[in-house]
Amino acid sequence: MVNKLKESTYIPDKSFPINVFFTLDIPLHWHDHMEWIIVKEGSARIQIDDTFVQLQKDELAFVNSKQLHAAWPLDNNTELIAIVFNEALVRNNGLDNTENLYFSPYLNQQLKLPNFLHNDEPYSKEISTPIYNLIDEFKREETGFELLVKAELFRIFGLIFRYYCQMEKRQINCFQNYNLTTLLNYLRENYEKEISVKDAAQMVNLSPNYFCRVFKKVTGKTLIEYIHLLRINEAERMLIETNWQVTEIAEKVGFESITYFGRVFKKIKSASPTEVRNSQIKNGYNKIFPKDNIV
Image (cartoon, rainbow, N blue to C red; front, side):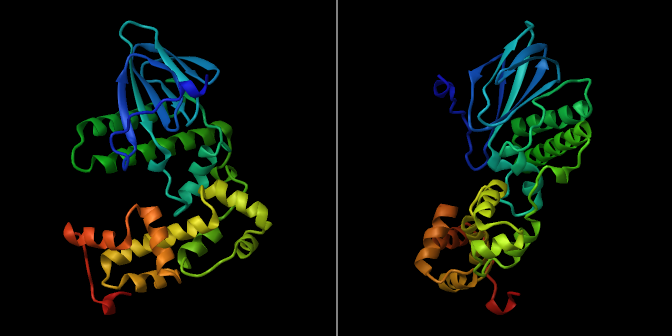
């Protein structure tokens, strides 16, 4: 029964995974995306899992991925807006501490945020305003709307986390019991060097087995997947900004085998290194500089 309720939500651009729906009601379903529901007019009865709440105009429901949810109008003039987006839009693969501190605990169900926000609660107006700004930017699709949609998305999350902290009287650094900041900084600065699970675990004073579980929870990736991501991101930059050969770039970012480098690159970027360089040149985006000018 639960599997029959899974919805394949329409996302028009998979590279910018968000969509906005204007509706009168929402049938019971679940999906792998997050969803924010705002009552634009009237009132509605909202279900999230086994909780039912009545919301009025401008009040909000926050649905995490895989949560059953539905909405029914309670007035003839009820209008709902649903913002559905994938976590990929806010995750950054642990490349800065926002994911470590905020999103990983929430997305991994370690942190329980409120599912509903009423008008008489703190930050309700502050949160509903950027919600409407996001909707407006998405509808107009003017140049730069993607950046402004993401900006509003992060602003909303920031306010939600701040509201949670004040409500629970706790600090944001209490969200996690694991501080991987030192290790993550080291990996970003030394991505081309080899590091074993044992050495990485020692840096954060954990056993290797426990470290693997913690690292995957925090970053969403294994240690080697995370290092590969750092290396491939840097390789992509070099392909675009330098005239180094692909073999040189592979070596510089830490790959001994050009074949293995190509396989990992294509898995992460969905294109080969040569295809990335050629596409940049074809579209006039390449910024090839002499080797000697590269610091």
